[in-house]
Image (cartoon, rainbow, N blue to C red; front, side, top):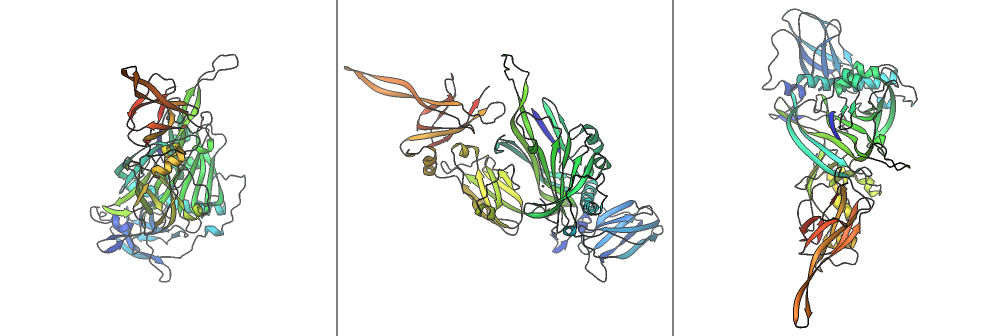
Length: 597
């Protein structure tokens, strides 16, 4: 079954960063007005400075809009690092200016009368009225409000989410922000969600949004996934969908308070109306309790026809929001996880075969990460700290691809809390063909880095976690190695000597179609032995086939010890007519067995 992910994560908590241009600090609005962007045509303009009242600080990164006499927005932009702005009116008339800031109450000025061709300069003073989400009373009830703009507490939180989402839509409409984007697709073990296979690609000059959803009207009619026997498409909402009337018409809303990644959050919950019979989404928009910045949108899919043994809670997604310096919000990281089904037949009590059934063979997780942002030719650092390095195999020195790299808080590791699987960890990566990895989005701090690999698991080995310090958005480059040959032998083949001329083959028995591990599969490795024999005065060579065998465990892992070095061997299913032949040139050989069924 083929799945596609269409549309589309923890953010930086409203931190403001600036980019250095020509020796001066410039905000987002200044970058948009830089070289290569056309200046507004001559006409009615309102420009000036925005600051807090009573001679307070200049307001940079405020989202400022020009409203006509009916209250309709005619132009919007962000104030620069020095609080300056310039907005163009479509014609003469009366206009007001609205100033919006995350974490503060909105402010609208009195009306300004513009005549044809006038260029008006004003100073907008805004009362600093913080929005304190921590002061809101959040009651968890079974009730669900039809409109998030109703109810004092819910409306307050929704307004902060709306402001962030509106800036994302504004940036998409402008089309002047581009990203370097890394996308990935992983096949996950259905029992442990460990990575079985991964592919990735990097794209440059990608315009906002980094993913694309269906229009809200189509999602309302068709639902958020189209699941067919051979091909399915899953969608997630973008900012435009989340703000749409269609989304409000088909969902009801509530509030909750919780900790997400150890930080206090207030969440706007949403769930579909009960009468909806298409595939729908439910979830939570999480906002930082202190800054009121939109952090993430967590999703789960409802009404999805699932293969047998699939867990509904794992059919989910996550969108992580961040903000450009003094500029718009955008989706920085996202992923979506869904099941992969295969066909099987079950024999009934009468000996007759039931019809083909869909059974779970794996999960697919697909997503992406924004690496760099460019506005008007100016590069902005996005996200937070990065940990990068390379993993090598101690036995042969070669890079080790396909390993899961997981980072978590050092205190959690010191308290011996269970290490999360890569699919459940907020910060993870998979090593590429060069053994390289990069984990982004980390705040400065101390982390524990864990390594897992399908073939190390086959050997029953799990590396100890490494202490990593992220400072000033980066850490030292890491060079990691798998355990030594002696350590591996002691774990895999107790009592064996890794230097006695014999090696060991470890691997995983996998289904040929889905690639998932298979338990209780009998495996054997064979080779030819030649011995000089004597009969009377005649000498001759006796040649025969010998070997060792084993059975894969619950995770599909098998171990075959005592294989001679320097020999050509054949690895195959026990009793099969043929298998895979190769030379044993290393004391530790990693080979999987593919099972056709």
